[in-house]
Length: 364
Ligand SMILES: Cc1cc2nc3c(=O)[nH]c(=O)nc-3n(C[C@H](O)[C@H](O)[C@H](O)COP(=O)(O)O)c2cc1C
Image 1 (cartoon, rainbow, N blue to C red):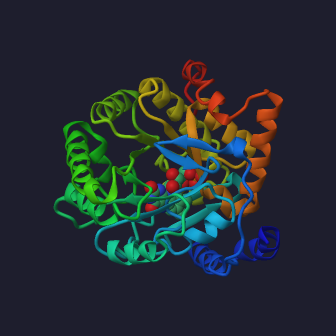
Image 2 (cartoon, rainbow, N blue to C red; image 1 turned 120 degrees about the vertical axis):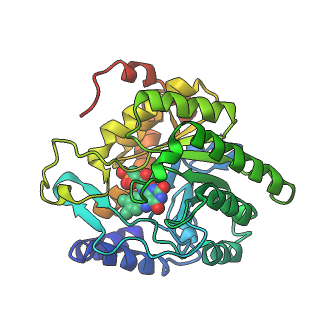
């Protein structure tokens, strides 16, 4: 099924303008048969943030922003799906074009700017599938014109608590002016305090939903010290490292497209994001688990994330170039890696390379 979809659709989608291709992919996913059930190898399963993940490969935020194809993605083999970023009120995002492919680099640049159907519409979809099972994280963000951005996060925690397997606070999108300031000092601490408080308030009806923070790979190491310190003090459940980068590695071949403003993802992000993951892992000292995101496009890159400190991984950009068959390929390669090293589970490999990685020269 996945093979047929990939072979027929991918070459055609490559010819279509990037955002239209994304809409077509979402429409096609709505046709995935309901009866499909992935067969999971128990050796890839793990318990993280108190949740049982059937496998460690998640769909990263941004692909299914409005919660339209969660079940199709789970049926096609993702271990979990992160919906969003959702903003409280609907908003259109930035003017098009705002999504660009860099095929020669296997990268993507986006400046979508939180186009969201809004909390109410996404909640209705997730509520309609309540009881269907599967792990569905909800990634939340603030409206561009909001006067109290922290209040936006709080309201979304209250709204989505009954349906979210976990929450991600997205404070690292480069496409909403000023949003990334929420990662800094007192503002960050105030955000955490108010969100942790809101989560405790709603926990009486929904239980204590795990709370993750998604950071930019562009933080300085001093800023990272502060962010990890605050997350530890406020006892968040985990971090996602990380979002897209505003940097443009000198190695990029698509020089013209690289000049577009926005966040860069995919293969050119891998080295920086993996280094930041290792830096986060050594600072967290086991206080909470991490999700590694950025440039995963094979079993080897997924494994490198795990060895750098990720308990789970997420991907998005590589699917644009490689198609959904990649998920199965990565699982097969991870199982081979377990066999080669005589490990019983991936948990044995988490963070094995982190300390060594932080001693290497900084990736360009
Ligand atoms: C088109 C596009 C849209 C994205 N939208 C979001 C978003 O709404 N919220 C978010 O937290 N991350 C968003 N991301 C970032 C991804 O979730 C991920 O962190 C990043 O792309 C790195 O992973 P990748 O290299 O596998 O794509 C988006 C990425 C892309 C390519």
